[in-house]
Image: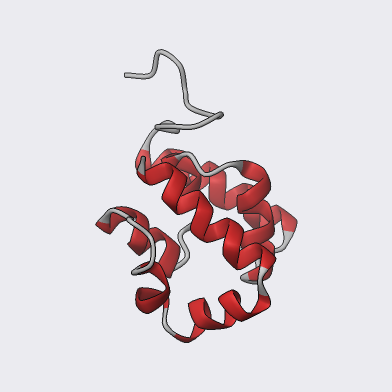
Length: 101
């Protein structure tokens, strides 16, 4: 159920300016409220948009999160492509690669 927690954290940051400020001030403290794996917390802290995509974060959530973190559209698309190159196919969620080995 960690994908849910990761997406919930991103959803909250996207929707609540005070949450975004808490996240930016201290990502580790913000993430402590969610049951994230070490990999998820690391990806959220950096942020590593490519890894967040591969972990299965919904594109609508990720798009707004990336924009809030300063990614312009082409950089966001490229980060997702690089995520697949670096970390392999999307693991979970709507965009999971079916039949990937």
